[in-house]
Amino acid sequence: MKKVIVTGGAGFIGSHVVEELLRCGYTVSVIDNFSTGHRENIAGLPVSIYNFDVTNPDVMDLIVSLQPDYVIHLAAQVSVAQSIQDMLFDEQVNVRGSLHVIKAAARASVKKVVFASSAAVYGNPLTLPVTTEHPTSPESPYGLAKLTVENYLKLFHKLYQLPYSILRFSNVYGPRQDAHGEGGVIAIFADRLRRDLPPVIFGDGEQTRDFVFVSDIASACVKALNAEKNICVNVSSGSSITINRLLQMMKEISGSSVNTVYTQARPGDIRDSTLSNVEAKEGLNWAPSVGLMQGLLETLQFSHREMFKIK
Ligand SMILES: NC(=O)c1ccc[n+]([C@@H]2O[C@H](COP(=O)([O-])OP(=O)(O)OC[C@H]3O[C@@H](n4cnc5c(N)ncnc54)[C@H](O)[C@@H]3O)[C@@H](O)[C@H]2O)c1
Image 1: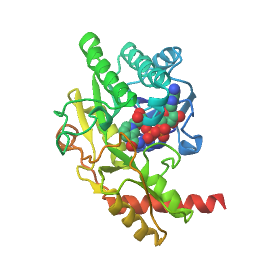
Image 2 (image 1 turned 30 degrees about the horizontal axis):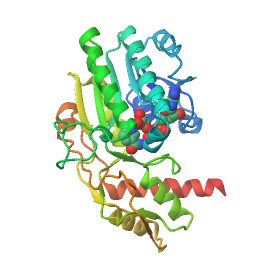
Image 3 (image 1 turned 90 degrees about the horizontal axis):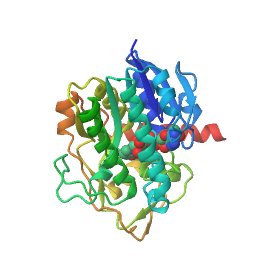
């Protein structure tokens, strides 16, 4: 059985990736420092768990000793705001930590490194939908770090023939997303609706986003292990929706009649975002399979179930 190391495997996306890998018959090891991930996310699954920080250089020996066939690198400082507040920390985790993982993957001669990159590498879109031909111009240290790691992967391929799949995710949502984290607007709205509190919209709510369900992201990550070429593709729904319409759908599904609060747009927030997923469809033989209505239903059901757990 092929062995896969998943860094950040106890996190929101990571735990879904771990489940998908197990479904596909892989042997899985998780490396996570549990800074934002949770043991419950992968509790009971037949995986080896290493409570380890990717910023610790010893992680390289750990990775090599596990003799992986593949590495899926998801561990990261995931907050855009935090990346601006503390650039050095962001650089330490998202650049240096990633470099440790990539160096070790090269030493272990893995067949593929899959890297979770982000739409943040593009900055403000000049044209929509954004394809990978679009210029990269990050607006945050977070985006810059993702782009830097992409470039390290390309360099490692030149120097050491390390195969890579770079996946640029749009806005991911689904069960287990942290409502207190950054950017998870659907998780935040679900949490507000569950507590019967008014959701807050920054700006007029007519800004658009491309939301992709987490199980579709997980299947793309697993398919990316066996991509024939080195690829850099967007993984997205390929369509977008306004925040107003999104909230309306969530209110309808949950039967909530709570008011919405509008407040000032946040400086730096982009107006519109849609990522083309044509290249992922071709390069990975992948397509998103969960529509927004279905995904929101599953997300709200999960949020609701959590409420009963707390009671
Ligand atoms: N959620 C999104 O919409 C989105 C969009 C684009 C890209 N991404 C990327 O996907 C990946 C997963 O994000 P997520 O949304 O699941 O967030 P998450 O916070 O749930 O997952 C990150 C995981 O990494 C772990 N981690 C953080 N720092 C670590 C360190 N120094 N050493 C070891 N483990 C560490 C955390 O404990 C957590 O389990 C990240 O690389 C993120 O940048 C996410």
